[in-house]
Length: 356
Image 1 (tube, rainbow, N blue to C red):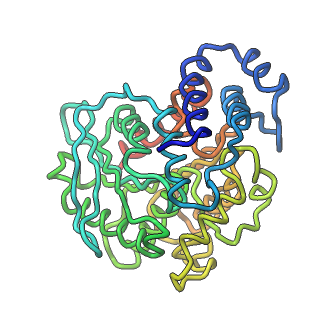
Image 2: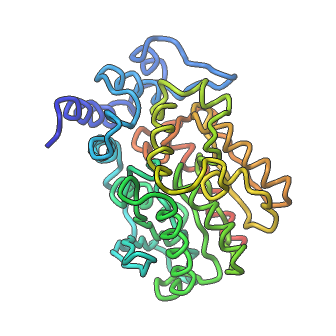
């Protein structure tokens, strides 16, 4: 059962995705206070500025509701259902069950509408702070990636906290990657080109899986695609504080996600299994496509991880989307600059996988 606030949020979001893309930038600025928002030389995208103003008008601030996982998941589902693009078409979508360390791991396979040689496969881990998100919350994004990159996407529904603490999500993600390497041909994909990727917490999982695969002597992913990844749980970067309120993901959200993921796990925030930027050795990892957003609390740690990979000799393509907020991969329906940012990073993904 939805709350009054959730119903108001849903109505506002549905109206927004219909109206905002049609408005000129000047009108968008007027609707959200009349002045552009500029921080660190970055100017917030007008459509996102309207969206954030509408969110505040409904009393919404951040993704975590009352520090409650179930309420927060319900709120996140409303956001996902009312801001997605239901008309993104791919050739086929089917459910997959992957053997995991604690039972079957549900997954969803998206096939591209391409002929000829088998296309690459991306093993995708959704964001949501290891607590929120599922196959449905990122369905539209995975369709968009599969369609526009012309690749297969295998979205993984790894175990979430608080029901399953770290390293459950890591174990499921690694098992899914290994299964994908073995079964890529069965999915119609090219077994020589299997990449990993994800947004936020999913980006964290993607880079941890890459390092664990290296350490275990497994075949490395063709690419690690890290979309505004969380890489440093110490939370000491400037952007965590500077951008920690008013831009969808808040500082409180991030802290609560981390605490929920780690509580009772026996892992410390400085463990490279959860803070990959603190790993001693990043040499020999897969090439990385790292995407950060100018108005994201996780911006600086994503930038730092890209720099540390490069220092270790890893090939890095670092795309800084200066006008974007955390979560923009799920906001493509807003059009304009958001759609352009998604198009750029998906085009880059396609180009990198085509070269492998």
